[in-house]
Image (cartoon, rainbow, N blue to C red; front, side):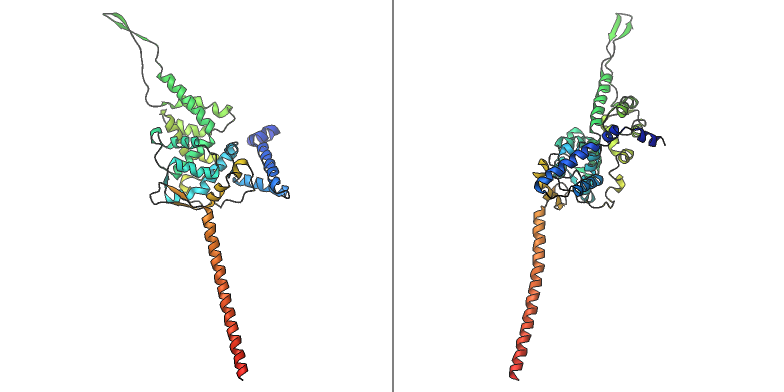
Length: 351
Protein backbone atom coordinates (compact mmCIF):
# COMPACT_ATOMS: atom_id res chain seq x y z
CA UNK A 1 0.00 0.00 0.00
CA UNK A 2 2.84 2.36 0.89
CA UNK A 3 4.44 1.66 -2.48
CA UNK A 4 1.24 2.64 -4.31
CA UNK A 5 0.91 5.81 -2.25
CA UNK A 6 4.52 6.75 -3.02
CA UNK A 7 3.93 6.12 -6.73
CA UNK A 8 0.83 8.32 -6.87
CA UNK A 9 2.46 11.05 -4.78
CA UNK A 10 5.35 11.37 -7.26
CA UNK A 11 5.18 14.49 -9.39
CA UNK A 12 4.95 14.15 -13.15
CA UNK A 13 8.35 15.81 -13.64
CA UNK A 14 10.02 13.43 -11.22
CA UNK A 15 8.35 10.41 -12.82
CA UNK A 16 9.49 11.44 -16.31
CA UNK A 17 13.03 12.00 -15.07
CA UNK A 18 13.17 8.73 -13.13
CA UNK A 19 12.14 6.62 -16.14
CA UNK A 20 13.96 8.76 -18.74
CA UNK A 21 10.76 9.15 -20.75
CA UNK A 22 11.86 12.41 -22.36
CA UNK A 23 15.16 10.83 -23.42
CA UNK A 24 13.35 8.14 -25.40
CA UNK A 25 10.76 10.52 -26.85
CA UNK A 26 13.50 12.82 -28.10
CA UNK A 27 15.54 9.93 -29.52
CA UNK A 28 12.52 8.32 -31.19
CA UNK A 29 11.47 11.55 -32.92
CA UNK A 30 15.06 12.26 -33.93
CA UNK A 31 15.34 8.80 -35.49
CA UNK A 32 12.05 9.33 -37.32
CA UNK A 33 13.12 12.68 -38.79
CA UNK A 34 16.47 11.31 -39.93
CA UNK A 35 14.83 8.24 -41.45
CA UNK A 36 12.36 10.43 -43.34
CA UNK A 37 15.24 12.01 -45.24
CA UNK A 38 15.81 8.68 -47.00
CA UNK A 39 12.19 7.56 -47.08
CA UNK A 40 9.69 10.45 -47.14
CA UNK A 41 6.75 8.02 -47.27
CA UNK A 42 7.58 6.37 -43.95
CA UNK A 43 4.59 5.75 -41.69
CA UNK A 44 5.33 7.87 -38.62
CA UNK A 45 2.88 6.07 -36.33
CA UNK A 46 4.23 2.63 -37.24
CA UNK A 47 7.83 3.83 -36.90
CA UNK A 48 7.26 5.18 -33.39
CA UNK A 49 5.33 2.04 -32.49
CA UNK A 50 8.21 -0.15 -33.66
CA UNK A 51 10.69 2.06 -31.81
CA UNK A 52 8.95 1.64 -28.46
CA UNK A 53 8.37 -2.07 -29.08
CA UNK A 54 12.11 -2.43 -29.57
CA UNK A 55 12.65 -0.33 -26.43
CA UNK A 56 10.35 -2.64 -24.48
CA UNK A 57 12.12 -5.77 -25.74
CA UNK A 58 15.57 -4.32 -25.04
CA UNK A 59 16.83 -4.49 -28.64
CA UNK A 60 16.98 -0.72 -29.14
CA UNK A 61 20.69 -0.48 -28.25
CA UNK A 62 21.85 -2.67 -31.15
CA UNK A 63 24.28 -0.82 -33.44
CA UNK A 64 23.82 2.42 -31.49
CA UNK A 65 26.59 4.76 -30.37
CA UNK A 66 28.13 4.31 -26.92
CA UNK A 67 26.80 7.64 -25.65
CA UNK A 68 23.24 6.40 -26.18
CA UNK A 69 23.93 2.89 -24.86
CA UNK A 70 25.14 4.21 -21.49
CA UNK A 71 22.67 7.11 -21.24
CA UNK A 72 20.10 5.29 -19.07
CA UNK A 73 20.09 2.29 -16.70
CA UNK A 74 17.57 0.54 -18.95
CA UNK A 75 19.90 0.95 -21.93
CA UNK A 76 22.87 -0.44 -20.01
CA UNK A 77 21.03 -3.47 -18.74
CA UNK A 78 19.46 -4.09 -22.16
CA UNK A 79 22.85 -3.94 -23.86
CA UNK A 80 24.29 -6.55 -21.50
CA UNK A 81 21.34 -8.83 -22.18
CA UNK A 82 21.75 -8.25 -25.91
CA UNK A 83 25.41 -9.24 -25.67
CA UNK A 84 24.41 -12.42 -23.83
CA UNK A 85 21.73 -13.34 -26.38
CA UNK A 86 24.09 -12.81 -29.31
CA UNK A 87 27.12 -14.68 -27.95
CA UNK A 88 25.92 -17.18 -25.35
CA UNK A 89 26.89 -19.95 -27.77
CA UNK A 90 30.49 -19.17 -26.79
CA UNK A 91 29.70 -20.15 -23.22
CA UNK A 92 28.00 -23.35 -24.31
CA UNK A 93 31.15 -24.41 -26.12
CA UNK A 94 33.30 -23.58 -23.11
CA UNK A 95 35.65 -21.27 -25.04
CA UNK A 96 38.00 -18.95 -23.19
CA UNK A 97 38.65 -15.55 -24.75
CA UNK A 98 41.05 -12.68 -24.13
CA UNK A 99 39.87 -9.17 -23.28
CA UNK A 100 40.81 -8.06 -26.80
CA UNK A 101 38.50 -10.67 -28.27
CA UNK A 102 35.65 -9.71 -25.94
CA UNK A 103 36.16 -6.11 -26.99
CA UNK A 104 35.89 -7.14 -30.64
CA UNK A 105 32.59 -8.89 -29.95
CA UNK A 106 31.25 -5.84 -28.12
CA UNK A 107 32.38 -3.69 -31.03
CA UNK A 108 30.10 -5.61 -33.38
CA UNK A 109 27.11 -4.37 -31.36
CA UNK A 110 28.48 -0.92 -30.48
CA UNK A 111 31.30 0.24 -32.74
CA UNK A 112 32.76 2.80 -30.30
CA UNK A 113 32.47 0.68 -27.15
CA UNK A 114 35.57 1.68 -25.11
CA UNK A 115 38.33 -0.79 -24.39
CA UNK A 116 38.75 0.77 -20.94
CA UNK A 117 35.37 -0.63 -19.91
CA UNK A 118 36.52 -4.13 -20.89
CA UNK A 119 39.72 -3.65 -18.90
CA UNK A 120 37.76 -2.59 -15.81
CA UNK A 121 35.57 -5.65 -16.25
CA UNK A 122 38.61 -7.91 -16.45
CA UNK A 123 40.01 -6.42 -13.22
CA UNK A 124 36.97 -7.76 -11.37
CA UNK A 125 37.91 -11.28 -12.46
CA UNK A 126 41.71 -11.07 -12.74
CA UNK A 127 44.41 -9.23 -10.84
CA UNK A 128 46.17 -6.37 -12.62
CA UNK A 129 49.23 -8.36 -13.63
CA UNK A 130 47.15 -11.18 -15.16
CA UNK A 131 44.97 -9.23 -17.61
CA UNK A 132 46.41 -11.21 -20.52
CA UNK A 133 44.80 -14.42 -19.22
CA UNK A 134 41.76 -15.94 -20.91
CA UNK A 135 38.30 -15.56 -19.36
CA UNK A 136 35.26 -17.81 -19.60
CA UNK A 137 32.01 -16.32 -20.88
CA UNK A 138 29.95 -16.72 -17.70
CA UNK A 139 32.51 -14.90 -15.54
CA UNK A 140 32.85 -12.11 -18.07
CA UNK A 141 29.13 -11.48 -18.61
CA UNK A 142 28.30 -11.08 -14.91
CA UNK A 143 31.36 -8.89 -14.30
CA UNK A 144 30.45 -6.75 -17.32
CA UNK A 145 26.92 -6.38 -15.99
CA UNK A 146 27.93 -4.90 -12.62
CA UNK A 147 30.81 -2.83 -14.05
CA UNK A 148 28.65 -1.27 -16.77
CA UNK A 149 25.40 -0.92 -14.80
CA UNK A 150 27.02 0.34 -11.57
CA UNK A 151 29.93 2.20 -13.18
CA UNK A 152 29.57 5.42 -11.15
CA UNK A 153 28.91 3.56 -7.89
CA UNK A 154 32.03 1.42 -8.29
CA UNK A 155 34.16 4.49 -9.00
CA UNK A 156 32.89 6.20 -5.84
CA UNK A 157 33.35 2.98 -3.86
CA UNK A 158 36.98 2.79 -5.00
CA UNK A 159 37.59 6.36 -3.85
CA UNK A 160 36.02 5.66 -0.45
CA UNK A 161 38.01 2.45 -0.07
CA UNK A 162 41.31 4.19 -0.82
CA UNK A 163 40.45 7.00 1.61
CA UNK A 164 39.79 4.55 4.45
CA UNK A 165 42.92 2.58 3.56
CA UNK A 166 45.11 5.68 3.64
CA UNK A 167 43.65 6.66 7.01
CA UNK A 168 44.54 3.27 8.46
CA UNK A 169 48.06 3.39 7.07
CA UNK A 170 48.88 6.93 8.19
CA UNK A 171 51.33 7.18 11.13
CA UNK A 172 49.67 7.59 14.48
CA UNK A 173 50.54 10.15 17.15
CA UNK A 174 53.88 9.62 18.89
CA UNK A 175 53.79 7.37 21.96
CA UNK A 176 55.90 8.30 24.99
CA UNK A 177 57.54 5.26 26.63
CA UNK A 178 59.19 5.75 30.05
CA UNK A 179 62.82 4.53 30.40
CA UNK A 180 64.87 4.23 33.60
CA UNK A 181 68.25 5.02 32.01
CA UNK A 182 67.55 7.72 29.43
CA UNK A 183 64.44 9.31 30.79
CA UNK A 184 61.92 8.83 28.00
CA UNK A 185 61.76 7.44 24.49
CA UNK A 186 59.49 8.66 21.74
CA UNK A 187 58.36 5.86 19.48
CA UNK A 188 56.61 6.45 16.18
CA UNK A 189 54.04 3.77 15.47
CA UNK A 190 53.86 2.67 11.87
CA UNK A 191 51.43 -0.17 12.37
CA UNK A 192 50.24 -1.64 9.09
CA UNK A 193 46.79 -3.27 9.25
CA UNK A 194 46.01 -6.61 7.73
CA UNK A 195 44.90 -6.86 4.10
CA UNK A 196 41.79 -4.86 3.36
CA UNK A 197 39.76 -2.56 5.56
CA UNK A 198 37.11 -2.97 8.23
CA UNK A 199 33.99 -4.23 6.45
CA UNK A 200 31.56 -2.48 8.79
CA UNK A 201 33.33 0.84 8.39
CA UNK A 202 33.25 0.41 4.62
CA UNK A 203 29.49 -0.26 4.72
CA UNK A 204 28.82 2.83 6.85
CA UNK A 205 30.71 4.89 4.29
CA UNK A 206 28.86 3.37 1.33
CA UNK A 207 25.39 3.64 2.81
CA UNK A 208 24.93 7.37 2.03
CA UNK A 209 25.62 6.64 -1.67
CA UNK A 210 22.55 4.44 -1.83
CA UNK A 211 20.32 7.25 -0.52
CA UNK A 212 21.61 10.53 -1.96
CA UNK A 213 22.92 9.90 -5.45
CA UNK A 214 21.11 9.93 -8.80
CA UNK A 215 22.95 6.97 -10.34
CA UNK A 216 22.28 3.25 -9.99
CA UNK A 217 23.43 1.56 -6.79
CA UNK A 218 23.08 -2.00 -5.49
CA UNK A 219 20.28 -2.55 -2.95
CA UNK A 220 21.30 -2.01 0.66
CA UNK A 221 20.21 -5.54 1.56
CA UNK A 222 22.71 -6.96 -0.96
CA UNK A 223 25.54 -4.84 0.46
CA UNK A 224 24.68 -6.12 3.93
CA UNK A 225 24.88 -9.71 2.68
CA UNK A 226 28.37 -9.02 1.38
CA UNK A 227 29.86 -6.86 4.14
CA UNK A 228 28.14 -8.15 7.28
CA UNK A 229 29.55 -11.65 6.94
CA UNK A 230 33.28 -10.80 6.99
CA UNK A 231 35.39 -8.73 9.41
CA UNK A 232 37.63 -7.23 6.73
CA UNK A 233 37.31 -6.85 2.98
CA UNK A 234 39.59 -5.94 0.09
CA UNK A 235 38.27 -3.93 -2.82
CA UNK A 236 38.98 -6.83 -5.18
CA UNK A 237 36.97 -9.15 -2.93
CA UNK A 238 34.17 -6.59 -2.78
CA UNK A 239 33.95 -6.40 -6.58
CA UNK A 240 33.98 -10.18 -6.92
CA UNK A 241 31.20 -10.52 -4.36
CA UNK A 242 29.03 -7.97 -6.21
CA UNK A 243 29.57 -9.74 -9.54
CA UNK A 244 28.62 -13.12 -8.03
CA UNK A 245 25.66 -11.87 -5.97
CA UNK A 246 22.40 -13.50 -7.05
CA UNK A 247 20.34 -10.81 -5.29
CA UNK A 248 22.09 -8.05 -7.27
CA UNK A 249 21.56 -10.00 -10.50
CA UNK A 250 17.86 -10.30 -9.69
CA UNK A 251 17.72 -6.59 -8.84
CA UNK A 252 19.05 -5.66 -12.30
CA UNK A 253 16.66 -8.23 -13.77
CA UNK A 254 18.15 -9.01 -17.17
CA UNK A 255 20.41 -12.05 -16.96
CA UNK A 256 19.23 -15.42 -15.66
CA UNK A 257 20.82 -17.14 -12.69
CA UNK A 258 24.29 -18.55 -13.33
CA UNK A 259 22.98 -22.11 -13.23
CA UNK A 260 20.55 -21.25 -16.05
CA UNK A 261 22.78 -18.90 -18.04
CA UNK A 262 23.55 -21.40 -20.79
CA UNK A 263 20.45 -23.60 -20.54
CA UNK A 264 17.63 -21.09 -20.85
CA UNK A 265 15.61 -21.11 -24.06
CA UNK A 266 15.52 -17.36 -24.68
CA UNK A 267 13.53 -16.20 -27.70
CA UNK A 268 15.34 -14.90 -30.73
CA UNK A 269 16.06 -11.20 -31.09
CA UNK A 270 13.08 -9.44 -32.61
CA UNK A 271 13.42 -6.98 -35.43
CA UNK A 272 14.31 -3.39 -34.68
CA UNK A 273 13.21 -0.25 -36.50
CA UNK A 274 15.63 1.34 -38.97
CA UNK A 275 18.19 3.46 -37.14
CA UNK A 276 20.13 6.21 -38.81
CA UNK A 277 22.96 7.71 -36.82
CA UNK A 278 26.48 8.71 -37.90
CA UNK A 279 27.88 5.75 -36.03
CA UNK A 280 25.37 3.14 -37.14
CA UNK A 281 25.40 4.23 -40.77
CA UNK A 282 29.17 4.09 -40.99
CA UNK A 283 29.20 0.63 -39.49
CA UNK A 284 26.86 -1.27 -41.76
CA UNK A 285 29.69 -3.73 -42.16
CA UNK A 286 29.42 -4.47 -38.47
CA UNK A 287 25.77 -5.42 -38.97
CA UNK A 288 26.77 -7.86 -41.66
CA UNK A 289 29.54 -9.31 -39.59
CA UNK A 290 27.34 -9.69 -36.54
CA UNK A 291 24.91 -11.80 -38.51
CA UNK A 292 27.71 -14.10 -39.60
CA UNK A 293 28.45 -17.30 -37.80
CA UNK A 294 31.09 -17.34 -35.07
CA UNK A 295 33.44 -20.27 -35.33
CA UNK A 296 35.99 -21.25 -32.71
CA UNK A 297 39.10 -23.38 -32.79
CA UNK A 298 39.20 -26.37 -30.46
CA UNK A 299 41.79 -24.64 -28.30
CA UNK A 300 39.19 -22.02 -27.44
CA UNK A 301 41.65 -19.15 -27.41
CA UNK A 302 40.62 -17.30 -30.58
CA UNK A 303 37.37 -16.41 -32.29
CA UNK A 304 37.00 -16.05 -36.06
CA UNK A 305 33.96 -14.42 -37.66
CA UNK A 306 32.72 -15.69 -40.99
CA UNK A 307 31.07 -12.87 -42.88
CA UNK A 308 27.43 -13.01 -43.83
CA UNK A 309 28.45 -12.18 -47.40
CA UNK A 310 29.93 -15.63 -47.91
CA UNK A 311 26.85 -17.14 -46.28
CA UNK A 312 24.58 -15.27 -48.65
CA UNK A 313 26.73 -16.41 -51.61
CA UNK A 314 26.36 -20.00 -50.46
CA UNK A 315 22.62 -19.50 -50.06
CA UNK A 316 22.31 -18.00 -53.54
CA UNK A 317 24.42 -20.82 -54.96
CA UNK A 318 22.18 -23.38 -53.28
CA UNK A 319 19.05 -21.68 -54.59
CA UNK A 320 20.59 -21.46 -58.07
CA UNK A 321 21.45 -25.15 -57.97
CA UNK A 322 17.90 -26.07 -57.03
CA UNK A 323 16.53 -23.86 -59.81
CA UNK A 324 18.99 -25.41 -62.28
CA UNK A 325 17.91 -28.87 -61.23
CA UNK A 326 14.28 -27.91 -61.71
CA UNK A 327 15.02 -26.45 -65.14
CA UNK A 328 16.98 -29.58 -66.06
CA UNK A 329 14.11 -31.76 -64.95
CA UNK A 330 11.76 -29.59 -67.00
CA UNK A 331 13.98 -29.89 -70.06
CA UNK A 332 14.07 -33.66 -69.71
CA UNK A 333 10.32 -33.89 -69.40
CA UNK A 334 9.86 -31.64 -72.42
CA UNK A 335 12.34 -33.70 -74.42
CA UNK A 336 10.59 -36.90 -73.43
CA UNK A 337 7.25 -35.46 -74.43
CA UNK A 338 8.57 -34.24 -77.78
CA UNK A 339 10.16 -37.62 -78.50
CA UNK A 340 6.92 -39.37 -77.72
CA UNK A 341 5.11 -37.00 -80.08
CA UNK A 342 7.62 -37.62 -82.86
CA UNK A 343 7.34 -41.38 -82.47
CA UNK A 344 3.56 -41.25 -82.54
CA UNK A 345 3.59 -39.11 -85.67
CA UNK A 346 5.98 -41.52 -87.37
CA UNK A 347 3.75 -44.45 -86.57
CA UNK A 348 0.76 -42.57 -87.97
CA UNK A 349 2.65 -41.86 -91.23
CA UNK A 350 3.56 -45.53 -91.56
CA UNK A 351 0.01 -46.52 -91.18
